[in-house]
Length: 320
Picture 1 (cartoon, rainbow, N blue to C red):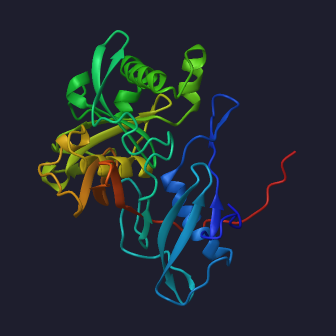
Picture 2: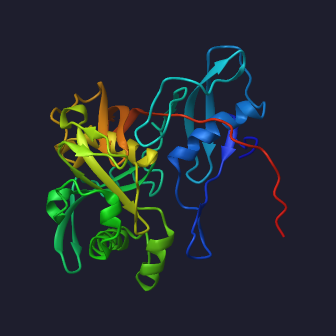
């Protein structure tokens, strides 16, 4: 985090995914959750000042070169961290911070929201044959598959799934096959790169059904629009990536994609809509507006997710 290098932004934010098993850092992705930290950092450091109840912060997301807009609540010119907004999988409540990723279409491959040009593509996965996948490049590079297509159309929790080496290996095989065809990784280093690179993220989605969160809370199927689990670098998320939630919501607004098959109703093109994702930690809601431009490419006019953040500590570590 630091002062902006763009005139239209309030802060520069560069993200590195540190690998805890290998001495490598992945600089090729974006983190939606830490973006919330980037939203409050310039206010805390005094780059942005306001006496209004809310202030808009423009974040230069350096990895992708895109401009993220955040709406941050204030109280007497200071950050407001207390509030009643709650996120599934996050204990307690806080003041809602809105992150709008509307200009992040094609931010990884620079080929638009649908980088292959199709809502669904068929990929050949070794040992599995042809598998339909929706590739959505929005906030991060995200792959969507049907849970029913790979025998995961059940409510098994991700802790149990993580301990099943066959399941993890199968999902990583899917990530690898699609990554190779998209040119994201190289064949000679495929196994190592899949353990280092966050992108692409893989999402296994299904229609709403009752389930229990990892904390043991029961969630009825009528409270959300699609059931989803995510995995990247051979590790399931115990909640749901913020960037992945953006791609999920945007995918639900594009006819023919796998995510769009799951909600009970399909949103009108150009109209505002919200998607509620049932994930291992609870429910996450994302708002979006999708339209087609003159070339029939899909464009997001809004892609907003609510998060919370607060300052935890400040200090200096002297590293040798």
